[in-house]
Image (cartoon, rainbow over the protein chains, first blue to last red):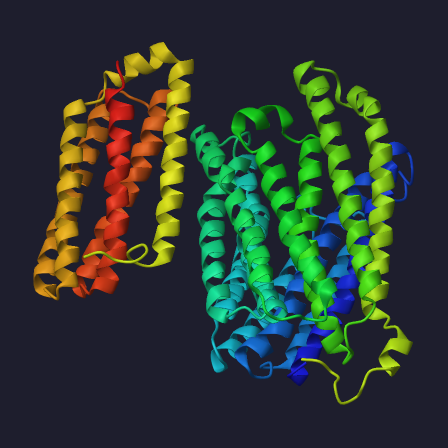
Length: 448
Length: 179
């Protein structure tokens, strides 16, 4: 850690990991409800548990983005953060808002708009926190060295805040409502979040492989250009069946079919950098997560997205378990892995230790990655069977669900593996192995 | 004049390749839909004006030629000549857009709805998307004509050639495929 204010990231990462644990635990509950539908049906109905599962995911990923920004921006701009105090205030605001939202959900207080269920005052709190954050990081960047990595990161972060504003607009017309709803949901995950992901990966490649900055920057430009070119009009693949004009089927199909390109570019980028790299960085676990991130994102977001993105295909698969399969691997591959990668990279520096518990951390990668992949396969098969029975043969929704129970049991099993992997990760990164630390030569540590 | 690598900024080539991919997918979609709805497409294609399409192509190719000469002028330091040529090339782009607007309004007046017919939905999307690029490219040529250094001119002209190349591909598929 070169700059004292980078320490802010530690608090963000810790809060993110608490919510991560909560998110996967609720995921497990949901997986169990799928096989035993009356489980907790009075106390914690499925829709409420799902809200917590998805909201906790989004909030902890954002906390991870914020933490990553607070960690890498001082290093990139070569100066301390504008105000560490504001950063802590922002974190308190976000955590109070998030906890209040979750408690509210348990008492059935929510706005009912999928993923954006937060009551209005929580949304406004998020906007205030976002403004504090943007003020803080933008001031830091303006006063310091400007790099392509910080520019792209800022573009992504400003985009996140800007597009979130559409969540405040809830028109009565259901079609218009959905159009703007996707401005938040789609343009976040298939637009501006990709910019954050690419810049954080670029930062890690720079540090882990020692490849020249100019080379990394060139790749970053290519990835950003592809992400925005395909992702913005790719929003059209959500406009097929919501009441918008038919030409969206063409715009959505064509542009979203190309959305696989930025993800492919990220795979190429990370692997080429590692091949070209001259540096042997001791944090092998961080490198594993970074490479795993680009590969799993390519499959989860790219390949699994493409499988049902063309309008004639989506006509049948829309809203089946195929979507759930895609959603799970895409979020895990792209954004969960990216956050866990930067956390794995930053934690030794934040705690002033050498990289520790590499084996446990890497084991947690393989546990989570294989668990999520197996979950994706089971849900994909479930989705294919469901599509045929329900959409082609026209059987009733619940009759079909009964026939899918084998897949849901297997999904529950893979969910258990993922939860174990998540807990192992948190242990491996936050609880250092003391005997290793004692042997560290004080003159050589902390490594930088 | 032999140069190493691609002329202009490498990012413009990412854009050009992406654009070409989009138009290629659009044309493939058009041809597949034509196979599926042959009668409708044959009937509808008679409403298009092949003469206007040919004239459009002549305008764009001439414009591309002028832009290419502008670029070699910039390369040899003839900036004022390059500026004039770029403005002329942009003017031809404006003429193309005017012709396109006439075509659209003619179709509109003959009662063609761009929604509801697969042919005209795709026609409007492909040519509309192309026209948007002509408009953008025209603006780009005018902007770089303010300071026509090779560094500015090269990527813009590369983009402009992509725009006329796309029309060369779009025109026969939409207007000329045996009716």
